[in-house]
Length: 212
Image (tube, rainbow, N blue to C red; front, side, top):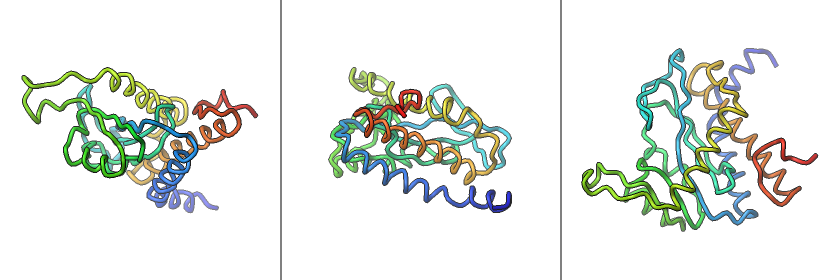
């Protein structure tokens, strides 16, 4: 195919990739017996992309996009979607929820509506308390188990960005092209995990642990 055809392809299959990731995630859950679904977003910074917007995370404002994702306790991605940076995490929660017994997320997912939706699919969602709901004076401590499990999704995000995408998402421009690039990386990690699960009985996402 020509470069023009490839460029057109990159811009048109982000939604399809999102659906494939969900299907692979569902099939994985059937054989993995995962206990957790962990929700988070991570910034894809790119100040030079015309589609970039301003978003906020725990470190402050940034310009670019977000990779919203959920994974299990083994760091295996289950759902993923890419948006512009200004899109709040809560707006994509429904697309990240999975039917695992337990779920975890930061304060961005501390919503009665999101927790009710999680309950409807069989998940008990635990979140960091959002002090905006009841005032800072009523802020509750984050459960120890959630602090432990949140490290898992952060490690998954970091692995995909540094080891799979190699921080090179700024080489493609536009929301759809950026989404296709990032979601392809997520799908590749799912494939590695499934390969390792079938071969070794453990769903490692790291290719150096794959035994060929």
